[in-house]
Image 1 (cartoon, rainbow, N blue to C red):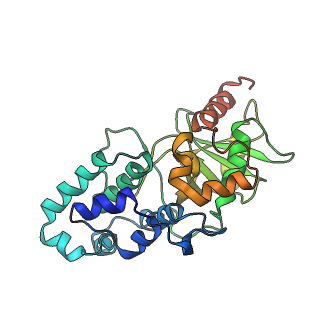
Image 2 (cartoon, rainbow, N blue to C red):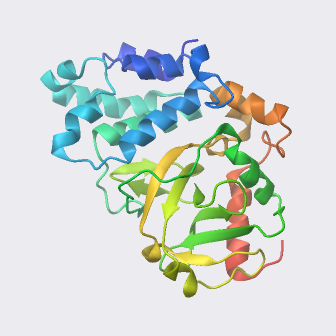
Length: 281
């Protein structure tokens, strides 16, 4: 399979590394029950780099995204211009998401005037999985279904605006879905990204209860750190989901997940707003 990202990067003289090309080419080794799809794996691959601080000493590791990183450095100004232009050249929604993340990894985003909350990074891996079925609980929450004894926490900014949804008692705890634009280590994180969060018991002691759904509102300042895991299928609009996530999306349909082709992020964003304002769903 030929992915738009692979083709356009190659045409621009910025060929991606073999690992990313194999993933985006939907090699059968990545289209498994555990991995989901090649596109899903590609977002996991980028997540590893997003979690690393953008330090000069690690720059060559970041440039490992390209097959010819030495050539990138030899014509750096030209390479940077080509990389920035590629974002606007992508026709497909999922291609733009991926290209923007690649650009920010290589050229860290530093515009403080742009919307987006900077998340602190937890320095170590957290025991939170990213299997293709992680969307199950978020899909159900989007339609107001929450299992007995489960809770839905919202991580909020200083103004009480919900930034992330954390599920507990539904699969792995400390698993979050981004509801608003976020920035991690200079990389813009798309809405609908799967993250892990770390915080202590004290964060819950002063956290107010939600009004309409079991759970609490945790201040982001009380969170110790986050890890990027991958994009979820919800990061792409419903009409493009099957094309973007292929076997990952097909497995959600086959397993009977709740309306994976129709559910949109705005439903979860509304769930969060209602919980803040005390509006019954």
